[in-house]
Length: 133
Image (cartoon, rainbow, N blue to C red; front, top):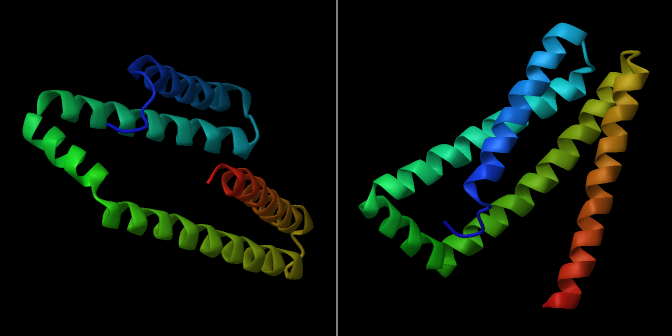
């Protein structure tokens, strides 16, 4: 599969996600830590299942390799990522406004800070990629 890390990295991600979730159940960590743990767990398991499927199903591996070389599918994937980014920024902004209006200032500000962070990260990545290509 294109753009993969070695399998031990995904195993480590999965184990780290499990460890964070277990630590959260015993220590009562902030909800962000629980979300990171769940995300690492889900991503690691997803990639491990995908790698297992590619290694055990040659027909699927061939189909996946063909799909990875298809420019139309790459274009659609890039467009869907950019539209998802715009939707996430708008949704977080609206959620921040709603939370501030109902008196949940810390959560509303967190939404705005996340929105600013995502926008700044997009700007940095855009600048780097515009110089590369």
